[in-house]
Amino acid sequence: MPLNSQRAQAIDAYIAANPTTCIVNEKWPMEFGGKIDYQPVYHIPIKLLCYNLNNGRYALELAREEADANIKFDPTRPQDHVRLRDLLLKLDPEQTALLKQDLADRGQIYPGVITQDGFVINANRRMAILESLHAEHPGGQFESLLVQRLPPGVDERDLWRLEAGLQLSRDTRADYSPVNELLKLRQGVKAGLSPTELAGAMFGRKVSWVEESLDRLNVMEQYLEYFGWKEQYHRLDGTNEQFIELQKNLKALERTGFDPQDRYDWLICIFQLIHANVRNWDLRDLKTIAADADAAEIMQKQVIDLAKPGTALNDDDVRQAYEAAQATIKSKDEKNQPNLLLHKAFVALSALDLKSGHLVTGPNKYIFRKIRAVIKDLEALFTST
Image (tube, rainbow, N blue to C red; front, side, top):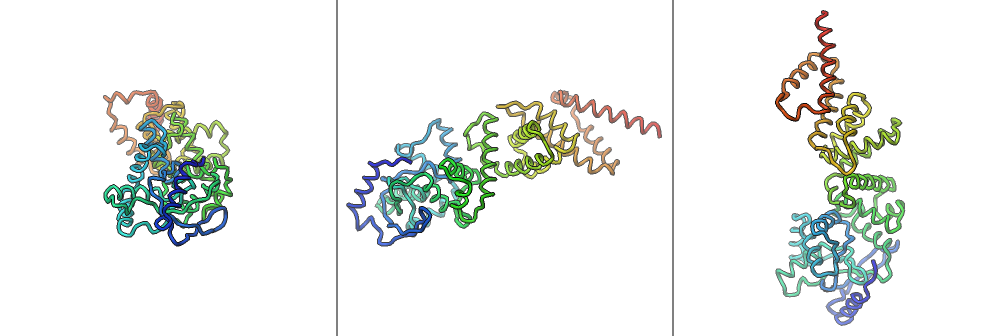
């Protein structure tokens, strides 16, 4: 991020004017530039600091707030500073309450990290809580943040490595949501880091995990663009497990020799299923459905053929089509139980509401013709014996 020299100078001036109260007489380890160094720790007034828009912990929530307000936040604007503070305070209310009580009782023990000009790289939520405590107890006890200060000239690559090491490693206690974690990886790619470098910055992460994660985010972005929601990442909240199953299904389909058009058709089918909130454990059946001619035909005629970019099919219709395809697979597994299948067919047909305005549709007419053909064969069988 570009250095704001005026704000950096204000922080310099404060440190120079308040050496006894500002500079903590200890140094704290910081891994930076590929090595561990020891840097001074300072008490810096929060009024000289800015929240970090690139903080991966609340990327989805920030996108939702910006979409609702129809603006892009600027952390240097006072009104947006307040919005960002309030957003951070709303994240994980239970954990926030515990941290607030701890800060009130013991003060800040571990320093955060800021850039030379006061953007908070690590400790954004602690700063928000301290601000709220200062509003409740304005005596001065909570008006500053304990931080280490990065040297000038730090580039985006080093900033990403620093934050990833602090918050994304397996042995840290960072509270990233799955999609926020993916977006943080994408931020590292945009900063110019390779998958190998990304994995190297995060203790316990493998290059294969990084590559698979970035591939998942790419498919998620295709999903957003398909429905006309480009960069509206908040719409992905809670979908990570479904997209993991999507990846598994696509790999399974590719192993069966599906051509690019087949792959695209089933990708769009899964997009519609995710939109309809078909859960990840149900999506596990998709590769079996795609491999079965009868079950695949249901999804082809009732979902794939009807799908258009930018439009979501009726969620209930999509779910019912998928359940019908699942039932087709299950019924074939029960082919050696004719009594059970006939009874289930009778119960299902008897349950139809013949007065329903939703009964006589194109897909249902097609299914009815197939049912009539089966009944004709059954009549011939039973009347001949």
